Image (cartoon, rainbow, N blue to C red; front, side, top):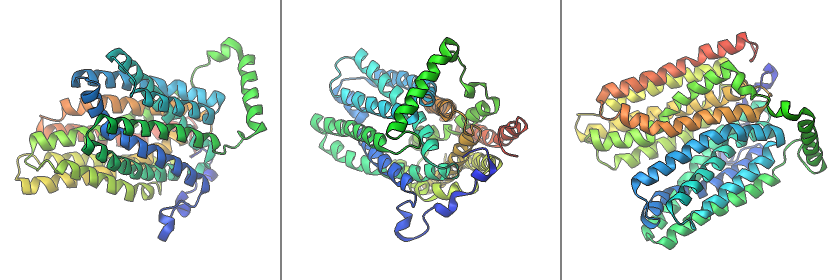
Length: 438
């Protein structure tokens, strides 16, 4: 989305409404991006389903050493987002994205050859840096290839495709888990690596305005010439997103809202197993409930976020719904199993509603507050905040919530509600500075 009011019309008229159109987006660019996303996420689902077992059983890593490696990799992912975004602004999102996706694929294939713990840590850091950097650049690419009034709705559609792809990939990965052989795990990881390389080729073929044929070469030459002309002073030019106070506040608040992912992926399973009498199979049920609701609700949730103030309201509603989710989950402690399971599932259903609202709102604000200025820089900073939340979230949820009963969940809920409601003042601050439309 962008600053001029004329460019922020609601995208709902372009969304699927019935029949087969519900599955195929009417915009050809979004359809191409959907095919890329589906291939990429099927591969990721494959790798995610077998990765931990492969690393621990066949590479011989202990849980502690694997945890350290993944934490170090997560930190590298956070640090890579900002320079990757800046590179996209300087050289174009598509060529930078192609390079990073290809590097991720090669690194993933390298897991099948790695020998020794230091090499594994180094490779994990390389893969995470390339992967998180490509996520930031991919969001900047969406700003280049999609009209401003279709960006958030397009991202919502692609997120639905992401969930479908991960489900398919995980389902296929279950076959490798059942076979439980080194060859099966290697095949799954190599299939993920091949999917990255195929995705890199598909991104290279994606038409980007101003980056086709001779125009792309001319644009690249111009960018290089401008960089040379700016010289050392230009090289030292500060990242505009890092000087944008309202945007940094929105990024920080969005990062707090992103703790909900650790809440779902780490907090809820631990809570079910350690603090409730709900059957263990409820863990699988929570993932099914979340996935189904996100697929069904993410696109509709973007409607009404066409203006920054409306997007901030969506974040506020998300925070309140997430707080309610936390309270419901907390109530599952100490009640009979027959009641605990449905209470947990109800809490996760509320979390899914809060998730789609918060994603729609923060996506819109990440584009709105940037306008058409340096999308790579802005998306790099925003993605760094989200990556930081994903990195520290499991530790925060497992230590500050689990084991503290309803009080722990209430504190987390208050934090999420506060972050969502604070989006309104942050947007009003941006409006006073003239960063967004009145």
